[in-house]
Image (cartoon, rainbow, N blue to C red; front, side):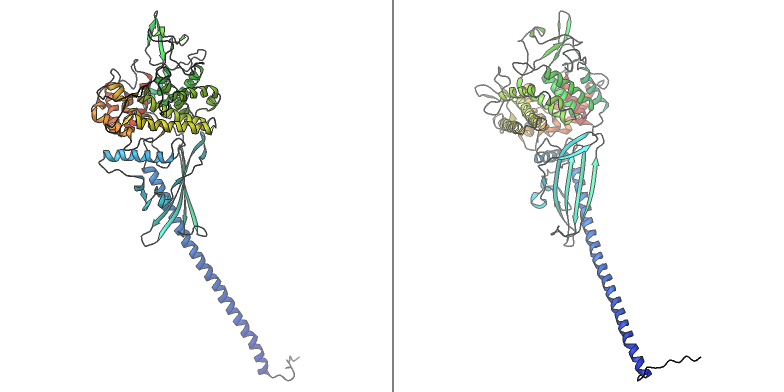
Length: 571
């Protein structure tokens, strides 16, 4: 069989071939166009992803630089309490806190022979972090909340921008957020590829978190001995009215018909409890809780204050009668204004240290009465009378009252949720502070007067008299440091300098022997003389070499409190 292909009629072979080449050519062109188009798309995507990668890298570098700056600044510029410069507490105004940290830095710089700095001098990557005109630094008015192992903590959120020059005419830009509480710090840095257009720009974020596990500091063996001795002075038998009371000393105050009686002085006990709470040790909270219970149970139902008590060693026998001490009137109270004011400081520090606020909220009526008693002592000039029966306005009392009003403002705001009363108390604290600076401070001599009497006469201090004249000069720094800023150049600091210049051997002298005024040594850390505070503590140890194992029985509980904090500062 022959296989023969017959050509269509009227067609020759060349014509058939031309009909085949045309579609083939079109197909080939289509393939080429497809390849070129696909390659173009691939190239376009490669260029796009390359651009994104480059912008992503720029944004990441910006975020990385910014977060490192934030960490370095907070870890370098540290206050006397050991916390960095970014605010993390809710007690102080953020600006006051930042200024207090800078004050602490300047104290050390002056000791090292260096010039002082301002907040605008604090820079990183050539950016002045706290210069609001360049960084838009701000602290949120809304408290930051952190739920940690010890429960809910409140703190602050700081935010600032960084435009960091790279050196070639370009910049890296980032926004930094610092969320901070006493035991928690979270820094978030958002870097941007484009400085002037955060919207639509590639953004990369970096986060650094620091958590202080068990924020309580470890006490030295000496500090633990001191704290233990304070605890040993507290009555522990819950069946007696003495439960929670703290004796003035381990030695009896007086003997009556052969029976030893021990004085419980609320003012001195307050000081010991406050310093125990500031030690950040759980034992301080336990001591404070019992003391608060005793104090609230002993508020006088008429005068709404708490008078001295005397107890037998077991605590079974209690009296407030002056016949126990042999003289004076019954009942006994040194000063109402400082007594109640320091109790509010105890309450506030107790809550801040993790104490149960229910103890406070459950006694609101009694605490209201105490507050009213304190406020009633405020005169029209902003200063408080010592007692309604003793019309003298003491400097030392009034700086304690300032701290008490600030503390009471915190209690009414944070525990009682009474914003109105909290605001009023804060305003009264501000008025008191202004009055102390304008009425009791002499800018010419750079000294504080010791008091103002009923007819308006102000008694100036004679520093050749140790107490109250000389000691009064260090009291503002000691108590203003609790809730505010003892800034460089402030009257509190200038008065401290006058004290140090006039009594230049105080750090190696046991004034008030046999036991020295430990409060002076502690206040040096706030007055700008930390190095002398360290010398004082060393001298104290040389005079009492067995203090780590035993404490003299005549040492008062307030001095134990002061020394507890001095020892912690000296570590």
